[in-house]
Length: 409
View 1 (cartoon, rainbow, N blue to C red):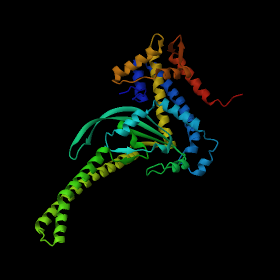
View 2 (cartoon, rainbow, N blue to C red):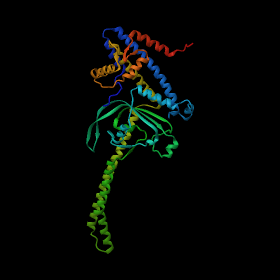
View 3 (cartoon, one colour):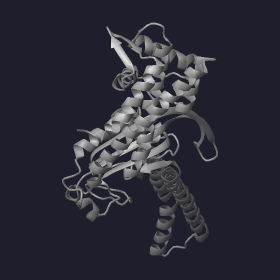
């Protein structure tokens, strides 16, 4: 699996782990907790401003607003600012973009539903998928009629899909297939899901349409065509020809043999038709399973839509920022000497591996930049150190007080 920046532990747990390093020094432990309580409130204030920015610049493209509501944001919503802010929030939350190769593989493979999906990407000006966190789990899937096989499936813990729809004129001109989902042309759709199989990523596209795979088509049409021709030519047609020939010449018809031959042919054709119907019914059942999976995803796995998705994104962004700050400050505070970024990075990643049996790629550059921005980290000749706890409390308290400076002269 790819190592990622995402830290799969909550902030309270990580804070308690770092506080434990102070041992019996209760005062330092309390100061450390106070420090990050204030920092958390400061980051929450920053997240509030980001949320306000996102909502204002998204409103013109929000499909959940009425036409009249959106008109009020004409000239106020800026798409480029919205996209830039959204990407900043996703980056802070340690989401990473899914490359086209991964999406193409998901379109060609299917772990759970065994069904090929067709997506008309002309519906979108642009589309992007972002993921965070991953794990593997064992699942049982039906391979044949009675045989179920246990396979290992890789899941993404969180997936956000960003869809920027084309305008109505373009959709009509290109005869774009939009599926059964209602679409507001020119709008931007955001959706967040949990626990999505990596090879079934395409199922979260609203215009994904089930189609028969090459195997499904071969199993349906090849036996039907060749079997049908064979039975007709061997049984049914000869029997009908003999009966017609006898009728034309006035000869006596061997009614018993003709009927027997005809009945055998028709019975065989009936069996063949039943087989073809079963193969087609298997495809229909796959479509039903896909519809159920889609409804489960929308109902049980969906964590937010459109502007409602901002809260989930900002909450995870705020928490990731705080966790990185806690770890960077704690490890620098414990060190007797200043450390390089690489040394801090190695120490934190090693701690996760040995203490928590977790491999991750700690974003040390971002963590150190955060410490510097709030005045807790100092860089000198490529080495980093932090100010002592007592001074850090004063510094962060001043930072928080100045966040609402309304008494300017």
